[in-house]
Image (tube, rainbow, N blue to C red; front, side):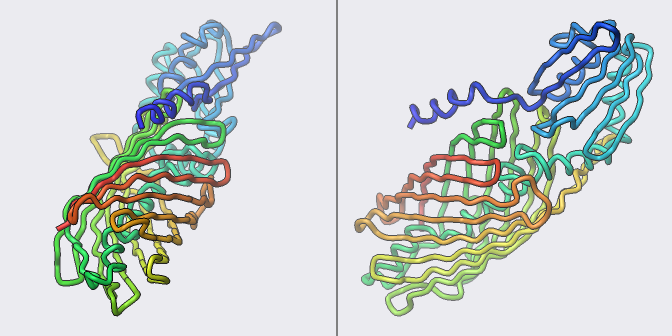
Length: 406
């Protein structure tokens, strides 16, 4: 396992950086400077102060065009020779403003102050436009974004009937007496390609509370943590959901069906100082799961989910920010589950995910398989692998999870 995870990390060293700029000086003998970076604030500051990679621009008037997460000419700059006047443009939303100061650093400080305070709505509109065009956007519109990860964690966590519960339903001797209470943890690691970007991601999940509210109703509060790396930039996220799985039918020797409906509500946070994006979100939705015992050794499962995602504004002193996320995500999956032995169960599935509103990756598909081993009547462990594919996106991951039942 270690060798595979190490190869995932080392295999992305040549990936494209999130930010690139081409600057051309004015005058009869113009020079061109091309540079790239992984932290937007440092990258823009270096350009405005004409140091680091942009040192050849010092003392010259120039114009520059910068790519933002793969969106070409997303940010523009037009400066005088002294660097005391900079026209800053955000092309996707038609924004342009000139900042004038006593020095380059003064102009740099003015730009930072503007976007952190009265320009917060401008930033929100810009990030929304980026999410509609970049497969690497932090907030929305692609499989690694805040909205997609929130929908995915509830779909697999609440939509997939646990392997040991299905085993109980297939076991004629037990009459389908599954253990519904318990605690579970899981870890996944993988690599992805988003447009021309390559990176690695890691996810950790935990069951949280699992409390019976009746014979067929429980309250579950799953917790998820995520971390992504792409050419020096980092993105982190966390989320908690409140799920209420309601079992209308329970599979046993007399009934071939499981039918469960799970209302979901929760909150999540995902952000990156490097990529200058982030969001605090709430979500609500419902997951419908039907498992059918098609043969003594085969259960066919259909899972459908609809979730609604909205951003929450954050205010701290003079700082106020809301990325204006308003998205809906639909997920539909087909799953085949079959015991390979009395203690081992095989699991194969395909899931289609679609963003209802504007998105850079409008839809993508996930194909996966896992093997679960019931070590004891109360404990099982699973090893799985997933492959995701969509327009300008593909990824694969491996994971290990375990659960204790009572």
